[in-house]
Length: 290
Image (cartoon, rainbow, N blue to C red; front, top):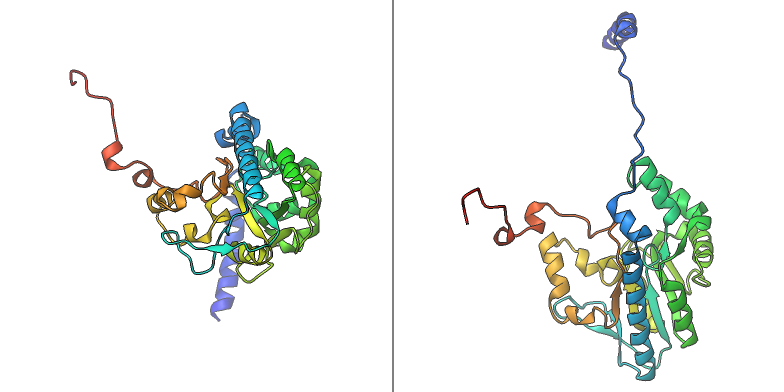
């Protein structure tokens, strides 16, 4: 009975609704220019210079390690912590360097153009389509293509560890090749989200790689590209502090290499209280004050 009354009421109200003033839904307005982070990463000379600088430093470091074999990998071993890290042993394993893909070795210029023009922000469905079809609109992070080639000449295996989907493995391999970064073979030199039960966490994949290789360099644009421990529920200030405490602080530029990415990711969060400590705040003095 209640259902019939609801239906009847809706029929009576329908003509009234038709007469009511309709609201105009406006389409999103395309921004006049890309966001500042995109301007910097995809367009600026400064962004390119920082990338090339990082890649040069990485190559110099790796070349030295190839000549003087280290006892340990730079992959944090299972059971280690940021305050008391332990590392996977090298033994006589072949050398490898492990890199994230997106905005570490490859620029997703086409997707970010779409993102900037629509102003909608990240959309998982659109990103999946990009993974499958975007190989024609990618390029290398400045310096990455040349240095990856140089690493291979040194006898160092280049391995990609990315959170792109394992379901799109073939398309990701094509995109990596199209960006001038060489061949990538799923399960050998390409590891993806879905390869194990850890989802977007990368430690399991790193441990798998470290079983076979002496990993002498890690490269990424997010702290999770070096250890999932950075993302284990820490506050913004604590996460930042963790990067600056020894022994972790000694790894930056000495096995762990960070590429700039002001566009997206785990580093872009925090409110005023997270970013600006109370004892470091300032405002112009009132007129007449000194």
